[in-house]
Each structure stands twice: as C-alpha cells, then as structure tokens.
Image 1 (cartoon, rainbow, N blue to C red):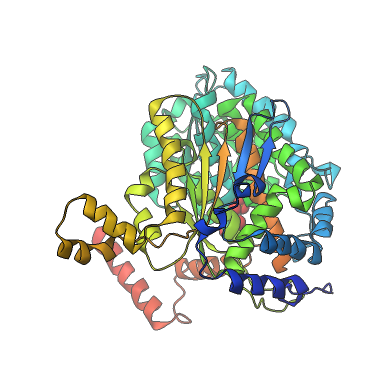
Image 2: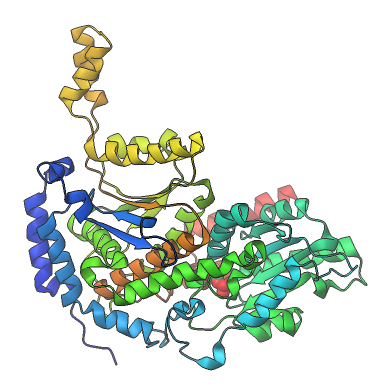
Length: 547
Ligand code: F6P
C-alpha cells in the first residue's frame, strides 16, 4: 500500500517559487544588499551551546543565497504545504519514515534526541563504553599481555566516514595520555591496510571490524587479511581474539568470524549506516577522545531539539534544506561544494557526499512514481585554503554555477588561524561579488599597461560572481559544535527528502554494482556487455603477467 502523496511541483508554493526564480533571474546577488543593511542579520540564524553564553554561537548566514524575502517566505510556505511538520513528527516518534524497508530512522535515539523505538535494541552502548574506557586506562591487553595502544578501524561507507571525520576533527584537540593511535582502513586495495599495518606493532594493536551488515566484501576481506597478519606476527598459538572487536547488527555473523561475543557491540537496525557515528560505530572516536564523546552527542542532541521545536521561520535544518532545494530546483544548480576551512574537517566533504548522495540520490517517490524535479545535487569539495590554489578557479570563471557551503570554525588567535578565517570570508565575498569588465580594466590600468594590452587582457580577468553560498561560522571546532554540525546536515537531508517525496534511508541502487562485482569475481562470463567482458579478460592477462 502506498500512501497518498502530492509531488512538490503540484503544491501551490512551487508555482510561486518558479515565478520568483524568473523575477530574480539575472539580478546580481550583491544587489540584494543595496539599501538593505539588515539583510545579513535577517537571513542569519544562531545556534548556541545551551551551557554557554549566547554571545558564542554557531552563526549560519544565508544572506549570500540568491533569494529575497518574498522568495524565502514561499520556501517556508512550500515546507508547510508539504506537511514537513508531520514528517518531523513521524521521524522523532520512531515511525517508519524508512518506508521501503518499513522501519524507523531513529539515529537520534543514540544521542538521546528521541525515544528508543524499540527498547530491546538499546545498542549495547554501556558495554561499548566500558570497553573503550578500559582501553584508555591501559587495562585492555593483547595476547602477550601488552596494553593495546593502537586501533585500526576496518569499515567502509558509514562504518568509516563518520568515525574517521570525528576522530580527525577531535582527536588532536582532545587527545590525552589514554588516547590510542587510530587508523582507518576502508578500501579493498591492499595498500590501504598495508599502510596502517606498517605503522602498527601487532602485540599492542586492536582491529575493530565495523560493519552494520557484517557482509560487506571490502571489510570482510580486510578483516581476514588483518587476521593473517596477526598470525604471522604473533605466531599460530597466540590468542588472536584479544586483537579483535566488532561493531555490527549481525552479531552472529561477527561471532562466526571468530570475534568473542562480549566484544561484538551491536547497533540497532533502525540506525542507518551513514547516520551511525553516534552509535557503537563511534567506538574508535570514544576511545580516542574519551569523555568529550558525550559533548559530541550533546551537540547532536541540541540540534535535534532545535529541529523538532523551532518554528520553520527560525529552524536551521529547515533553512538549510530549503536553501539547497531552491538552488537545485529553481536555479538549476547541479552541485554543492562543501568547503570546510579546517584541516580537522578534511573528511567532511566525503562524509557529506555519502550523507546527501546515498540518502537523496534517488528519483522514485513515495507513491512509486518518478520525480519530475531534480533531487540531490552532486556533492564535492575540499578544505580551504588548499582548494583556493586548485579548483576555486572554476568557481570564479567556469561556465557553471555551484552552490557553496563555507564551514568556518574561528578558533584562537594564531596568525595562521586568523588568516584561514579571513580567507574563508574573502572567498565567499569575492565569489558573490565577482569582477566586471570595468573593474577588470581598472585593475589592469593600475598596473600601468598600455591601453591595447588592457583591452586584450580585461575579458580574461572578468569573474562572473553570483555564486550563492551559506556560511556556517562556528566559534571553534570542538566536540559540541561538531555534533551539532553533523546533526544539522542529517536533518537538512531529511527536510529535502521529505519535500521531494523520496526515502533518504534506503540504498537499493548501490546493490546493483555489488551484484555485478560478485558475478565478475565468480568468473561468470556471458551476460556482460562486450566492453566489460573485454576489460575483464585484459585484467586477467595483466594479473598473469604481474604474478
Ligand atoms: O554499499 C553501501 C553501504 O551499505 C552503505 O550504506 C554503508 O554505510 C556501507 O555500505 C557499509 O555497510 P556495512 O556497515 O554494513 O559494512
């Protein structure tokens, strides 16, 4: 039974928004600020850590987005007409918003942001905590009695990207004497595991096999390779089990692999992989940062509370979702660049890629029909200022518009840190303002070039500008604000999925490629297209030559 559902383009607000898009087309973004000194403040929202002064808050500035108040009001109206309030209610009530698989998406319960949909599945958080703290206190020993001092997390997708991001972001800030070194291994390419093993001493290393399904080919192959390595290094009689733990929903499969049952930390079925860093999948993060993990959860939980209770007019995930939807569907902008200005957030674009593209990279709607409007953008990006010396050129002078999210933790007074933040703000401004022909000529004239040279070069200096952006200014990068940031994007994705009418919580698409890979691995010939069959045969020949 499919639920009755109105596709968004049939809602009255959609037509109004199309009219706004036509009206605003060609109007320079900078023009919105003329005679409207209050725009920046009006189109910004604050989100504070409740235990801090409100002076110190995350500030989300949407004023460089290409809409005016009237368009923005109709975006809010669209959310109302799409009954987003009912969607939020269902999400937090633990109803089956994952409607294809018939289950809740209650990752918020892992941070106390909503009740547990099923109390029998609390997720074994207590046991996982005890294990992580024993490790931090040096009470967890390898087979030869040496304390465990290094973790290697073997997992992929959601079992890698979230914990990797959180560890990179916070381990440097929160590490203390108890913190083990942590490596993340995702790829089935042997070099990934080999690189981590080259740094490791077997006697003091623990592998966390992190896989919700415990059926992911890459993870299982790397887990097996890790076991072989331990046997070689520690000898056949060593207690290899002392060097493994697992996080999985498939507790029996993990046990069948040989992991001791008391070291298999479950995560509930209703926590999706890409939403799972808050659950036992966060084990390496907890081990690395200890008590600060609670602050991380508190940040996520505060965002849940805000999302659930703030009116749409002041609701940050709602604004994020609507701004993105406006760019995708009304300005026909096809990609979103995530630009964190923080080395600690270097894995943020990859994490966001999975979150947005695996969640909303779909076109089948709740009623089984096909979406007539564009859904998830292509998400990409990289850290500033590094990207400024590489791909920002296309943002300045390329042929397409790109939506930009600047994520800017301010931090302390180190001159390089100040420069980092100045650069972020300058990029957002320059990419909005651009440089027209007259300004290009003026810039060249200041170089005292001959008039003919000025005319020849000026068109090449023109920057179109008008790249719309949102800036998230964080007081600093800490566990609370990281938690809030990740939960903000999770809820943004929910807002968009709900309005588009797609299910953000399944991922049937990726199964197709897995099936094909299994067929190739099994040497099944036939049924493949001529190109693939030929390439597979060539690969086989190269293998013979190499070995
Ligand atoms: O193939 C996609 C996917 O299922 C993701 O959704 C998931 O995060 C990843 O693989 C890893 O899955 P698992 O944790 O079950 O190994």
